[in-house]
Structure formats: C-alpha cells, structure tokens
Image (cartoon, rainbow, N blue to C red; front, side):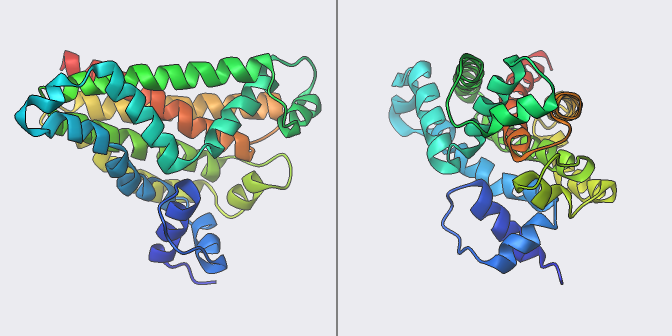
Amino acid sequence: MTRSPVAAVAGALGFLSRVPVAHSDARWDAFRRTPAAIPTAGYPIGALLALPIAAVALAPGGIGAAVPTETVAVVFVAWLYALTGITHLDGVADLGDAAVVHGDADRRREVLKDSSLGVGGALALALVVLGLAAAAALVADLARFAPIAAVALVIGTEVAAKAATATLVCVGEAPHEGLGSALTAESGPRSLLGVGIVAAPVALVGWPALAPGIAVLVAAALVAAAALWWARSRLGGVSGDVLGATNEIARVVGLHVGVIAWTLS
C-alpha cells in the first residue's frame, strides 16, 4: 500500500491528540507504517501546548506578570491533557503497577490488562503530573524574560518526546497482539533515519546556544533506551502502554533538562 506522508501525519495528529482531523482507515494505516510521522506531529502539537506560556509571556499591559507562576503551571497541565487526552497517562499508571508487582513477565502483563489502579500506578501518575507541573513552572519563569526560548523549548521537547516513542516503534518488538504490535510490526531500525531527520531541528531550540536543544534530544534518547531495556527485561517487549509512558516521561524529563541547560548556557 502506498504511504502518503500527509495522510500519515494526519493520522498521527488524530491518534496522538484531540486535534479535530478526520479519521479514516487509510490515515491510520499510513500512520502506523510511518514512524517519522510521530515526531512530525509533535511540531503542531507542541505549538498548541505552548499557547498558555506564550499568552502569559506576551500579554499586554503587564497582565502576564500578574499571573502567578503556579497558576500558569496548573493551566499548562490542564491544557496539555485537554489537548492530548489521557491515554498515555493510562500507560504510565499501568506500567507503575507492573513495575511493583512480584512475578515474571507473564504476571506483569496480566497487571497491565487490569483496569484497577494500584499503589504503583498511583505513585507513577503522581510523579509524572507533579513533575510536569514543576517543569511548566520553570518554563513559565523562563518565558518572562525569554519568551521565544520558552515556546521553542516546549515545542522541541514535544517533538523529542515523540521521537523517543517512535524510536521504540522502530527497534522494539511487541510481546503480544495489540496497539504495540500494530505499530512495531510495520517498521524496523531503518526507519530510525526518518525519525532522526524530523527530530534534528530540536537541536536549535536554544539558538544561538546549542546546549538546550542537544540536552533535550539526549534526554529523550536516554528515556527511550531505559524504556526499551525495561520493557524487554520485565515485559518481554514493547507494548502500547510502554509507548505511551515513554512519551509522558520523556516530555517531563526534557522540559526539566532543557530549562537547566538553557540556564547554564
């Protein structure tokens, strides 16, 4: 079947966000066969995610300065999940429960299928959401004196997080049929080239300083490597939950690392 880049990106937007794009089997098929569409969709999604940061930083008449950083952080988190949905957070919760259970890979995969939330899942969710809110506060503070850098960091981190997810799609194998196998079965390591090309501009998010963008990319790569190792050793492969959790964790880590690198550069 012919792969249409436009259809693949539209399919990625429809799957990874609540952006109102028309859904179709052709777009879904193009998306799952094109891992590079995942980080490509990160650019428009990241631009939309950055709107609360940009609004506060660029508000006229000092309105932005009057909005507390903590308020911006809460709005950012709420806006993010209104835009992207909570499907990936469900992956975080499921992996948190699977991480603390005793047993082999089969037992952990059983826990992944259990819809009830355990202590491990609750802790994982709390860490990710609190980490995201803290990162949003850092970005909001950055935006007060460097709005372009702050917006670029949000966009670049979203792209890098999705590149981490796409990397697992390219090199991972699913342990069972499901969303993970629908994506990983259609691609291989050769598709990493396209993912890398799409994600490469992230290195310029702190221009003229290169440290922030490179730090964000390195952080995403490390999260992907850790997720791949854990999934293979604990679950027997990369599932849909692993892909979703990788996106969420890479976003949080990338925002923190990016702000730190920008501050030090």
